[in-house]
Image 1 (cartoon, rainbow, N blue to C red):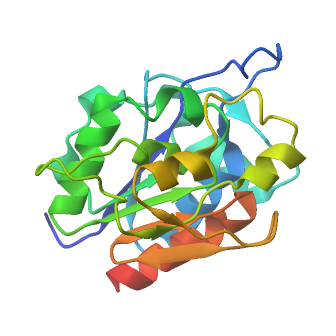
Image 2: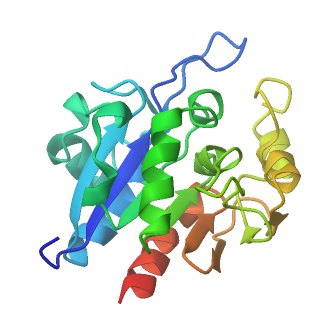
Length: 221
């Protein structure tokens, strides 16, 4: 390592929203805003996705300059597969949300491998909105769950109900985090909310993406 902090933003490759017939993917702002914050802090920022290539997008705001800059310059059209990522290169991993994460993040062995390596080498694991789906089954080298005994947040049951997808997602994120031994700490629906517990940083919803990245930068300072 040359002293520069390196961050990896992980994206879903899943594009089908349950049985709705609608498409999903990663929520663009939840990747774009942290990307902007990290770069402003002098980080070297890379992207990766579960399947590689160009991951499916959701929640894009075509009038948002940060999102447009991200889509134009971050390399999102040709992301490496998580399987091909060397975790030793990174000090931070951030799991961006979007409903697609609920299908492919929880059981992806390579996302787990990267996050475990980053965390066990003293780095920061962060996730926002549905991104904490990557944490529900994540174990450390000793077999313990990363989130066990930790305070976390993520998209709440009431937020899921508000967007009408309670019966479409494979599980309710807040419940599953609790089952993994975490203490889920909710805030009012769709308000900015970030929880920091040691080197684990989680944000509740899209409104929290920038604040999650800010919290990571503060931890690394």
